[in-house]
Amino acid sequence: MALRILIVGGGLAGQATALALRRAEHNIQVFENSYLTPEDTAGPLVHLGPRSNDLLRSWGVDTAVAKGVLIKTIDEFDRDGNAKDTGVVLPPGWMYYERSRLHQALLNAATASTGSGVPVEVHLGTEVVSVDTQAARIVLGDGRVFEGDVVVGADGFYSTVRKTIAHVDTIPINDRKIAVQFSVQLYSGPLTQRFPNQPERYEKWTGSDLEVRVYSVEPGYLLFECTLPAQAGTETTPASVKALLIQAFPSNQTELAQILAALDTKNLHLWTQAEYPRVQTWTSNKIVLIGDAAHPFLPHEAPGTSQSLNDAATLAAELSSDVKAEDIPRHLAAWTALRKERLKTLPCFYASACT
Ligand SMILES: Cc1cc2nc3c(=O)[nH]c(=O)nc-3n(C[C@H](O)[C@H](O)[C@H](O)COP(=O)(O)OP(=O)(O)OC[C@H]3O[C@@H](n4cnc5c(N)ncnc54)[C@H](O)[C@@H]3O)c2cc1C
Image (cartoon, rainbow, N blue to C red; front, side):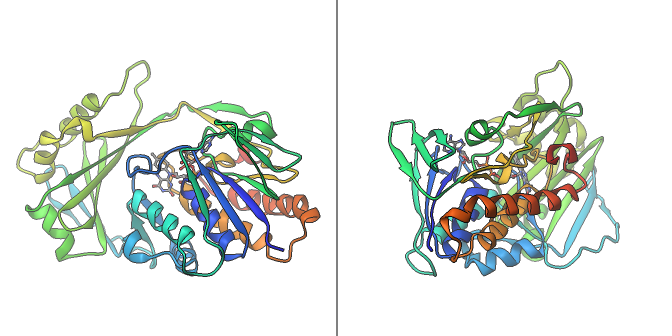
């Protein structure tokens, strides 16, 4: 039976879930608070391993839109621009993606008029304000009500859906970190030229106490990111981050130092979290949490997106097209148990959040 599935949140987890469930022949509607502009979906690069990349291919995600870059080597430099011989050999099949492009590619595939399954309906600019756990019913900020067979809460770190199914406590983060990202358009210079001349790579530059990673998904367009410790009692601003970066790479002989010196702080984006929600209940009756709503990852923890893609694939397998409406709670509980077991094995994941 084709289920009517309402997905709250159209981030990477929500779009992947919509696409996977579309391929499983269900009828999907996504309710997304923002308008999914490139600013709404921006963020540091996403690294995905072979299994996640296979999932994207199996769902028919357009690689020309996603523009994933296969990683064969990481070239490392010291703060003065001297190449380091690290001898690092990377496992095959890893790729990096610019976050907003991956998001667009998932959205395109979910809503495309071609491809298997019924195209997903996406309602942008719609905030879900409450959820009825018994009836799989959601209420929007403008008062409209939608009812389905299943509600998927894919509404991220500060999930509204989560509040309706469980009490959630929080764990303070003692070693708080700040994720930093910026991009520059630059058509000449050795750093810029290395990417088209030697594709399938990215760079790590190590300054004093600081590592900057440099990526490129199209010629002349460089993406930079790094992670900084948050200083207790000190406000971190784009200007203070720029000063720290310049301090870490002081030699004005390197192209990186010149880029940092010319950087417009309006292009510097910062993300941090002070607390980590500990979510023990992921499902109630016909409601299930997925992605960061269920298992929040911090901005500097890499597996958030790959785990969201795997959530989507396993949920679609659990809710196969022959699932009966009365069996939905049992299937959602089985999926939750499966995913909790998997997440507990990840070294960076707070195991206590999964008990
Ligand atoms: C700065 C940063 C860097 C990261 N870097 C990486 C990385 O390198 N690799 C990696 O794998 N993972 C990374 N992650 C984690 C990764 O982005 C997430 O774990 C993953 O994308 C899952 O996101 P999500 O869709 O669950 O949540 P989100 O991306 O937060 O999406 C939630 C969506 O729900 C919408 N929403 C929220 N409330 C409502 C509501 N009430 N009604 C309707 N819509 C609502 C929001 O507008 C948003 O679009 C990073 C995360 C951050 C914040």
